[in-house]
Length: 104
Image 1: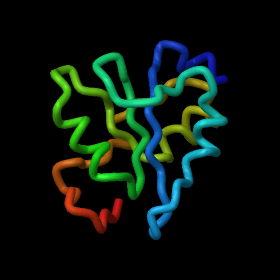
Image 2 (image 1 turned 180 degrees about the vertical axis):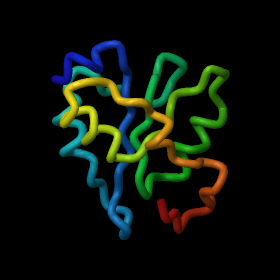
Image 3 (image 1 turned 30 degrees about the vertical axis):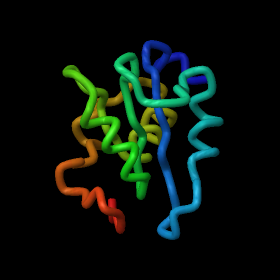
Image 4 (image 1 turned 90 degrees about the vertical axis):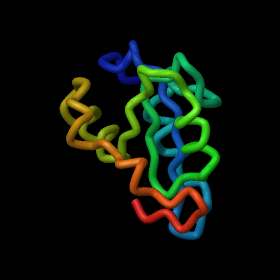
């Protein structure tokens, strides 16, 4: 796993445009850091075309909430071999239509 992210607890919700789960590559890359569900101990949510349920759970968390980042954050961390600044990779969850049809 990525030792530079060892303090991270990451939930992955990455799907194709059709809604099929496409997160297995990222789960493999982040082995040992993956959380089975979103909770207060979660530090990051890797999100692309994910389920509305993921965003609902995120919104119900107390502050500080986890970072919601795109898949490019994971790729950049791997390439740089460091935890890169999440700001550049943030997903604007307020702009996502929770009813579905997410285009992120």
